[in-house]
Image (cartoon, rainbow, N blue to C red; front, top):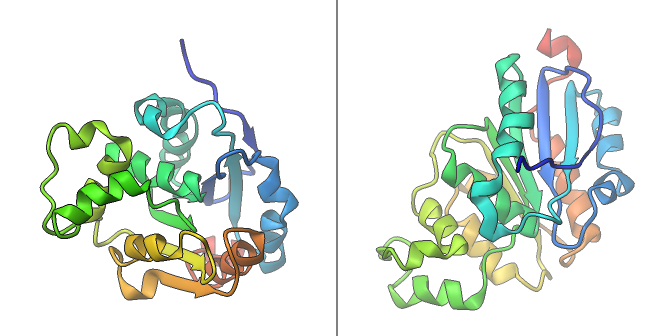
Length: 219
């Protein structure tokens, strides 16, 4: 049966699209309630924002994300739009999982406090001496979190990435390990925990980083 993903947001055929995946138990409307779209509008960016309901599709179903690709990402790129994929908390890990399974399908990656994986999964990597020394087995790669860490061994060097978290985030130490897999300029921290008090300032910083153009620049 075809998977149908519920999205929140309006497509205006802007030359740039950002598809954001919310965190666990976070309805897609929450991103708009937090003011993410208003921040785009204040800057006059030629950017559409869509938030996708991931409540029905967990991380262990990355192969079921065909709808995300077929219904959202591929059509936007087919019409010539630059497409970024992003996520908050668990949504961040799902975004990385999607790119790991489908290399080259996005033009950039925005990760706000991405869930770094459970301790048991990360222990597998740690026992090997870290990501660079870890040689995943077939059994390891049946774990969707470890498939993400396999991708993090060598993320695409040319892929623009923004990754940020709050310094008091309960996952801060482990998120930092994810961040270290990307270039130093990609990494950002602000005061705050695993909540909107940190995510909104990070979002503002992301929008100000120069990844997206205004309508006049995009013309």
